[in-house]
Amino acid sequence: MTDSDTVLRCEAVTRRFGGIRALKGVSVDIAKGEIFGLVGPNGSGKTTLVNCVTGFYPPQEGRILFEGADITGRKPHRIAAGGIARTFQNVALFKGMSVLENILMGRHNLMHPNPISSLFYPFLARGEEIAHRRKVEEIIDLLQLESVRDEAVDVIPLGLQKRVELARALAAEPRMLVLDEPMAGMNQEEKEYMVRFILDAHEALGLTVLMIEHHMDVVTAICGRVLVLNDGTSLALGPAREAIADPDVIAAYIGTSSDAA
Amino acid sequence: MFYRLSGIHHTGYASAHRLWSVPADRWQVVAVLALALLAPLFVSDLYLGSYVLPWLVWSAAALSLSLLMGLAGQLHFGYAAVMAIGAYTSIHLAQAGVPFALAILGAGLTSAVIGTLFGAAALRVKGLYLVMATLAMQYLVDWVIVNVPAISGGAQATLRTPDVTFLGLPVETLSQRYYFALAWAVLLALFFMNVKRTSFGRALIAIRDKDFAAAVIGVDPFRFKLMAFLTSSFVGGVTGAVLAFCYYRAVTPEQFSFNVSIQLVAMVLVGGLGSVIGGFLGAGFVLLLPIILTNAIADLGASGWIDLSQNLMAHLPLIFYGAMIIGFLLFEPLGLAKIYDNVRKYFLVWPFRHSGS
Ligand SMILES: Nc1ncnc2c1ncn2[C@@H]1O[C@H](COP(=O)(O)OP(=O)(O)O)[C@@H](O)[C@H]1O
Ligand SMILES: [Mg+2]
Image: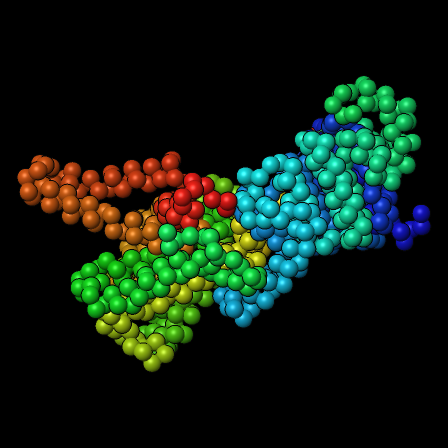
């Protein structure tokens, strides 16, 4: 892997919460177009790493580079504007809005929200709203959300909510997509759909994907390489099957929780 | 049933994006507007001037506050001060000979600047402290107005609004003032609806609902909360000017006291946060109900049905009104607007019980 291929680089990222060291100098490079898996037992620091990358919890030590630019300590909205979109482990949709509005919200950075345009709606806003509605409908098609388009987000099943959140992230036209356990709490059928959608989006939009995932069958099926975290340190890094088969990794999993399998 | 969704098919996004995509709603709007336009012909001057006109202006005030409280989710306990700044600015500008249209613009801008400054300070803190910061605005502005004679004309003074013309149209007689207030209320209602269906309004609702999720798709929470303060303070200042020129016509600092700020918050809560129809319903409720109640109780007392002491009679409406506010917060937090919406949906999907949306 040459340097110009690297989209995201984490250099010795360390993050503490009070006395807890959630990440202890984790380094990883993610290449353009990769579907990269982040695995590890509960509490091993996966979400924390993602929070460092997306600016929620800036690391206290180390650097994070996105497409060569240092984004360490940047505010989340600026990192989002720079081309990274994410979803959350616990769905974080806007309850006061419909499915359609939630996905439209994803296009925030591509629109020009301001009170003057709203005031002169017919002249300044309508064209933009309709143009972006078209784009959103393409994503609704891609993720098969037509039937719930106008529903309030809190009345649809969890599996669909996760799909809406993916749609909202894709609507931003990011270059890198970060997914925190996109299949948590899903049944087999929903999982298969989700895998399909992630692969479709990856292919159709040419994305780089960083994905936290507990389901090892999913990880080995779609991830090229994985990083295994344990207790804030990296345990193994490499092609999915090899990293997961690593004796240290097996020991870490058996030693902690059983729900991680 | 005439009030149905069936048979309405959107053939393009433009038709789906209309403000009232159900024909029955459109007819309702036309009917209400026609009534409002004809009101000076069939409503007596007494009722027009002391009920309908103030109701319109306070509805505009509730809508202005609801932009901030309902859409962006920022409590403001000093909104009467925002309106006071607008009222006093417009009067002084008009007295200095500035055309009324510009005086109103100046009122909006002055309120926007001062309101946003306090907003910026308030946004540095959270929750209860935000409330304290807006309270501080109320008391600071009150104090400055009362203690700077150049603004209030002295501690006990009343400032009279000069006669003005708006772009050549005089705003003097009762019906002229009524139409002016109506025009502002309608314009503000349209603006509010347009904010809600555009990216600006969605961004505000997004930070209200989940600020971290809003940030992750690129919304700068601080910037948009500040824009909410700016927009809301601007229209609040204009509403203050409209209140002064169309209704009070003689302005004193007490008309913009802390009590008024509380009443405004009550209007927004009772009507329904972030709802246009709720702004009108909430203002009507908070403004008119105590008056109607006082009259009703006085009538009952006079006819000998009940025998109440003068003192209790004076307080009964307040008790009732307080109970209603608590009742709404407990049982229908989305306010009167939600009740209206439920009735509307009932007809939309009749004979079925539940609608898809
Ligand atoms: N906001 C926070 N405050 C305090 N501790 C935290 C916070 N976020 C994460 N942690 C701690 O960091 C460690 C790693 O958590 P996390 O990254 O969520 O694990 P994972 O996603 O791998 O299950 C845990 O011990 C957790 O308690
Ligand atoms: Mg996690």
